[in-house]
Length: 99
Image 1 (cartoon, helix red, strand yellow):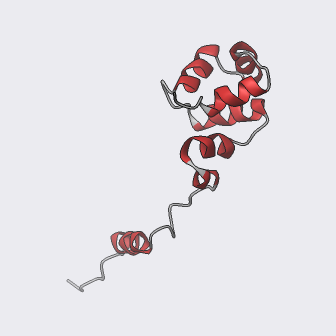
Image 2 (tube, rainbow, N blue to C red):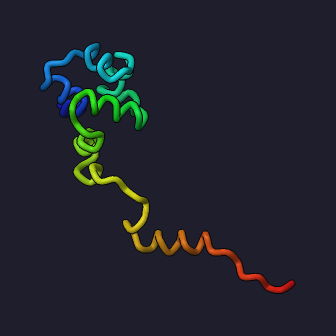
């Protein structure tokens, strides 16, 4: 059996119903229900609201799902030096040829 989604696990640890969490987060109970079951991935702002209502950081919810690296915001740079080279090359302005 799969481990429960972190939203559900944390919600249950705090003895909060789906309806209570939804009201506290300012989202619909259907949104919480679907997020807990993995039916749809909540938007960043919804995830932040749910995390705040649960008393955790959005990164803590993601770390539970995707591993500890998800807790660290990615800048999209520096993770793979080759990616930086390719990005720099694609942004390079061609030299003026004097034509």
